[in-house]
View 1 (cartoon, helix red, strand yellow):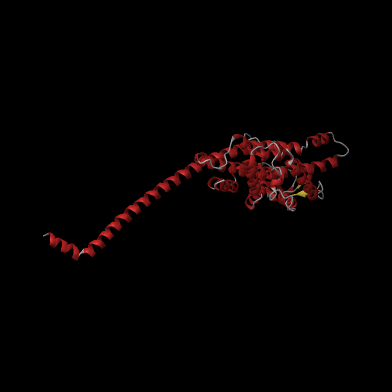
View 2: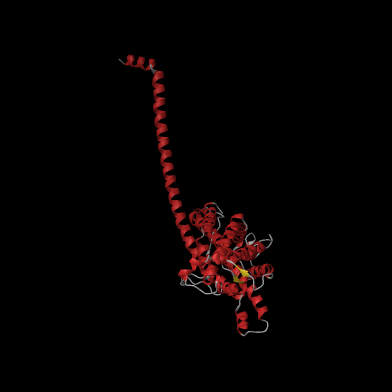
Length: 376
């Protein structure tokens, strides 16, 4: 019996070996595939959790960014009103002086300088804060998720502390408090002088003419590559080097250099330029509300009710002397941010638009994604 069994095994040895290999290989492959499937599922779960945490942290960063923009934006606009004040000119004009014509010429320059600076400076500030806060947010997220391992391994992974955070964010103060804004105002005022000195106060302007005037101002301001506020934001927004009191060490220097590179990138320049164009459109819309008050039937000087105006004339056909446009422009920029007024004044509308601008949000999201996912 035993010999028969041995003979059977001998005759079918190769089959048993092949079968064993096949069965064993199948079991091994199954277990390997099962292990890999479990690893893949665990990786997907980790990625999902990491993505959820990153999204929550980004949304928190965005909320903080919006609050900082609105706070610093209001401060910036007050600084612009102070830099381009027309109070003294208005007071002198009320006294009906002999040099009234000269005062109106100065009022013309100052009013358009203030409005133009409003639009440029607020756009630049929003782009800068989007970049800064998302750079910092990315570092903080990476610091949080990798801090324990770095500490355990005595790694050189940089740590963000409150002092470094404060020093980094305070760099933007250069724009408002240390000369950056004043330099921008000087640039804008010089270009406004060039564009508007040939326009007499009696020159009649339609809305299309006003739009073309703003376009000419943009072209003049952006004409010199070395001073263009869109492509050379850093020239106005941040100091050329870290101040002497900064004690953040190599990490602060690294973050500062990265911020400079980001602000001079084509993406940041494009967002800033797009916002500025939209800002001038908002200004024209605000001016148009005043043009409506000058609609008259049959081109007569008799005013009509609001309900009649659209029946008698198209607002684009209305022309107003520049001397009457100046107080309109001055009035648009005479007050700071006030979110409680309805309808919103121009300063509030500008900041609100820049905050919710899709292009600005995408820029911030891209910066955050880069700095939260790449090791410092």
